[in-house]
Amino acid sequence: MSRAGRLLQLMQILRRHRHPVAGAVLAGELGVSLRTLYRDIASLQGQGADIAGEPGLGYVLKPGFLLPPLMLSGEEIEALALGIQWVADRADPRLAFAAREAMAKIAAVLPRDLAGTLEESGLVVPSRQTPALAIDLALVRQAIRAERKLTIAYRDAAGAETARVIWPMALAFFEQVRVIIAWCELRQDFRSFRADRIAAIDTLPERYPKRRMALVKEWRAREAMGERPERQPGK
Image 1 (cartoon, rainbow, N blue to C red):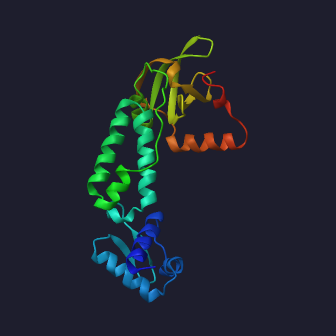
Image 2 (cartoon, rainbow, N blue to C red):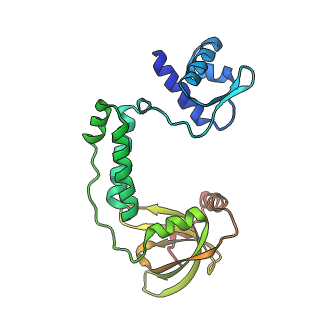
Image 3 (cartoon, one colour):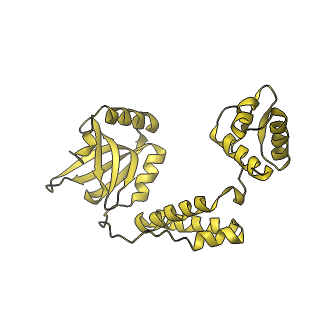
C-alpha cells in the first residue's frame, strides 16, 4: 500500500471510533510499526486533520473535519450516485430536491476523472409511481428530528377513519408505500401507518416523553423477540 493510501486508511479508521484508540491498535490495523504510525499521525495533523492525543494515551479525530474528495473510491461514488437517484425519484419533493442539490455539490468538488464516474455511472434506478399523498412528509421528518407528537386522521384498509396521537420515530421508504413507525397513544403500542392512508396531519407543540432512540431500541428489541404489531398497519 502506498503512503497516501495508508494515510487515507488511517483517517477512515479514526472516523469509525468516537473514543481515543491506542497507537498499537491503529498500527496493528494498518500493519505498520508504532514509529511509522506516529509519523503518519504527525503528517495528518500537519495537513489540518484535528487529531487529538499523544503516544501512550491514544488518538481520536475530532468532529467537523472534512475529508478530501480523494477519500472516495470509484465504487463509493457509484454507491452515492445510486442512492441519490433513488431518493430523487421516490422521496417527497423537498427531499428529492435536497438529493439533487447534494449530487451537484459532490460533483463540484470531485476531481475531473471522479466527477465523470458520478455523472456517467451505469447504475440506474427505474422510475416508479407511488401513491399520491395528502400530507407533506417533510412535516413528519421534522417531527421525528424534534421528537414532537403528531395528530393524524388515519384510514384503515376498510376505510374507517380514526384520530390518533402518535410519537413518530422512523419513516420507512418501501418501493410502493411510505410508512411512519410510531408509538400510538390510542393503542398504547407501536404501530405503523401508511402515509397514503393519512388524510390530515398536524404537529403538536409538546415533545413526546421518551427519547426517540430509546423508542427505536425498544421497538427493535420487541421485533427481535417476534412481537411485531407494526405488521398490522394502524390497527
